[in-house]
Image (cartoon, rainbow, N blue to C red; front, side, top):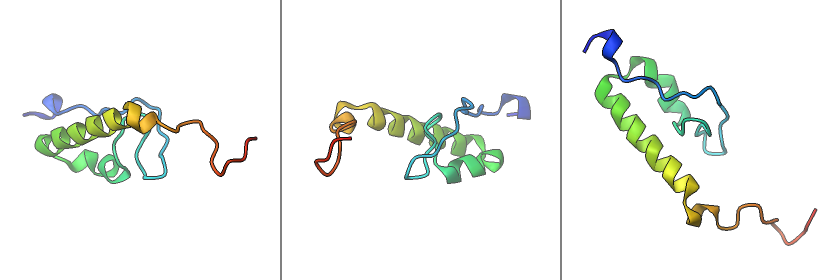
Length: 76
């Protein structure tokens, strides 16, 4: 593949890392983001698959259970 045909970055310019250093915009890890420019297409596709898995897990009902509930039993 030529440079023009490379797998495109999934960056949506909504960069904000969670507590596990995963971007809340594209769901790539910090190390995946930093290594994107030197990754070959096979690595990029693998990264995109992991990001999709993270996104699905984050949006699953199980992951949402307890979201927004106060911790420690103290309400604001």
